Image 1 (tube, rainbow, N blue to C red):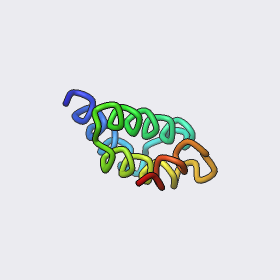
Image 2 (spheres, one colour):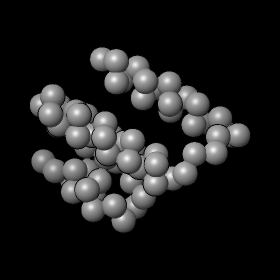
Image 3 (cartoon, one colour):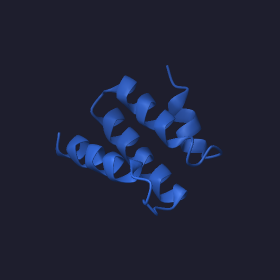
Length: 70
């Protein structure tokens, strides 16, 4: 639960036009969230987070794999 709260706060901060966070770092954050969701047996959440990370690092093989898992 805490992780979701912090991720939501990050997404809100990143959405501001003056945000200057590097794309690979954002992708890594979404990958970590995706892995955490998977460990909690929330596969739909894992895929969702992976798909959110792909625009920031489209060639990331880990994000690609998780995003397409069934």
